[in-house]
Length: 537
Image 1 (cartoon, rainbow, N blue to C red):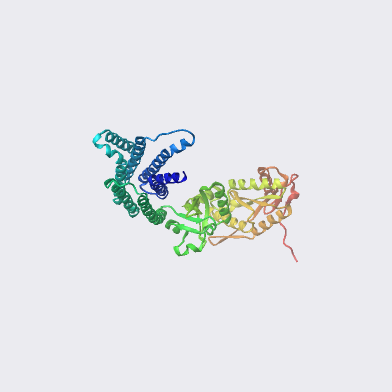
Image 2: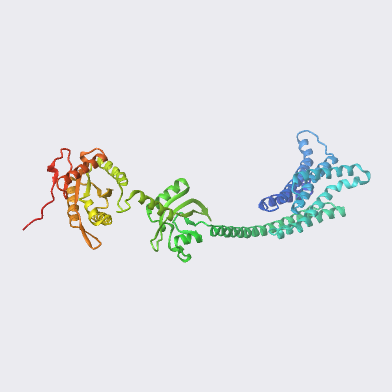
């Protein structure tokens, strides 16, 4: 019994095994390796055709085994040869239609494989039905599946041999020769009416598989080379676009700030010749390192920054310029980088500075004007009151300035005002705020200054100006000034302290000019201090 079963299963394998195994291996192989093909549709149809061919053999093997299985459970199933023939023919028609569809798609004759395959398989089934019904062609019906399969393999082989695809020509022609060999095998079985020899059938499928694998290895190498050329072409296109851009573009590595790509416009903006690119990093061009830190912090949070205004510098000449930059994080050849574009706004910034100076400074002396002084002094006074720090304001006026204009002319008066402004600036701290308050009046805010130091500063200014000489048209002009001094601890607003300093100035003038007067709430003449007399031996 065991020997009979073994012989039975061997007969099944000889009848269906080589085609089943060969079809499955070819279906898996083609489906796996040709996924990236440019004729993906045709090869997909080819893959499905082999799956249908394998499915046909599984169904037929199952149908042959079913009587044994049913007998084991006490049932009886009869095998009808006509049913086997029609199952075989039906699935062969579908497989053949898919093979033909694949060949036509590879040759780029059709592009809708599903619809075509349905119509083609229906036509092949109809032809089989007509042949089976015709007495003179009845014998042909038994070999019709082999005719369909051999025709499909021969047609597919011819299509692959004559395929025109620059990237896959040699690979597909190699596998086409294998299909021609497989087609010749089925053809000789029809012509010479010899039964299928499973060994030769297995060899035929093995040859197709070998040629398929060899072509696929060639295809992989070709694909890798093509991919590399494509990457190089994309890089060249990217560099061309960047270099042709009318805007300065700089791409820097996010990790260490090194410059990866810089176009000619950016090279000109940053004064960076090609041979100097490795010498400097992007951070070297920031005039203020704090702004660079701010930019990196923002880019980590936002990923994209638009119109970030920052002052840059040339690290070779230290010349500064203003830019408005926009930047974003990109993946450049596998590493994170900053893609940054620039717009030179130096001219605009200079105009803004010029307008600001015109709006905030006095045109004659170059000092702050009254409005700008009040803006700056308001912030300083608020700070003084909040933190309980001392602060004072000096109001000074040139004595008998009208007499200078009447005697020497208004141009001489202007020279005196300019000379006085320069003298005051030279004798004050950078933290002090000096402004022309109007006409021949000037105002000074001394931050963090107590009464006694404030009076010393005022007295020093008064004394030095008394000894100052202004030369105009070979004439020496001397002036004196009167000063009023007020301290923040006696007032609760800026206007009040300015008024207090002005009242003290008025008292200085009333008490003989060329003197410093300190304002106090119970202000009296005792607060008016005459100029000290020089010491005598």
